Image (tube, rainbow, N blue to C red; front, side, top):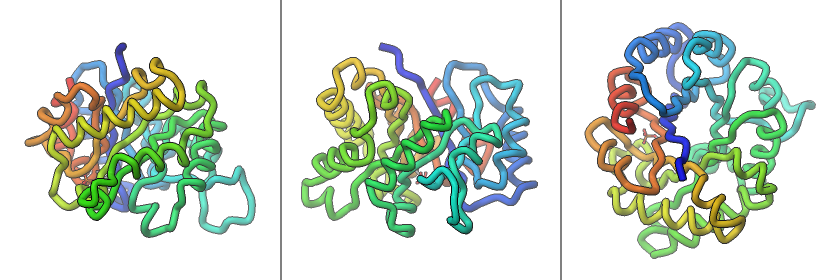
Length: 252
Ligand code: PEP
């Protein structure tokens, strides 16, 4: 079973428009040939400018970092999936732990956002991951299984096939602490098993599962070397073209 190999950058709330254009140009200049998909998760305001910069690279797309679950309406300051799709963006990161904790996003909201994204042809990259307390209590596997069930398993099989999962242990995001390759592999294999139980073994085998949490050029090869790790969701290191490209090369 060949699964899509993906390196996705999450720029978070960094980079003004000019900086974002310059970073994109530098990434494109250094991009190696290869079969991986590269996703640039930019702030909303960059999407319509960066999407046209990518048209001659068929393996590079731009993604939003959130969308609203409703199709339209009186939701001041919010952005719908249709608006995102209209910029030329192809994907959206959903359920990032920063959105779950700072913006009180529940699994149910993330499910509804995933449905909204799919209805507009956007590929959802849905994040799950446990806190340090849950890991230390030995509850990390069951916690992530519950997140998956509530955030995703209401989807039909054909919709689920379009989803990418990102495992991001909360304790490893932006902290410099990385899950060991063994911890990442254990959770990725668990996620695949839970997906296979909810759908079927073929679905479990083919879903791409990205690891996120302080991935850097110095640890990417080891983490990406694990059999159930299909790539990475990269925060801090995606803001530097040399580091991001080194991580892309680590997956090839
Ligand atoms: C992220 O924000 O998704 C992330 C993984 O951040 P970092 O790589 O900086 O830990």
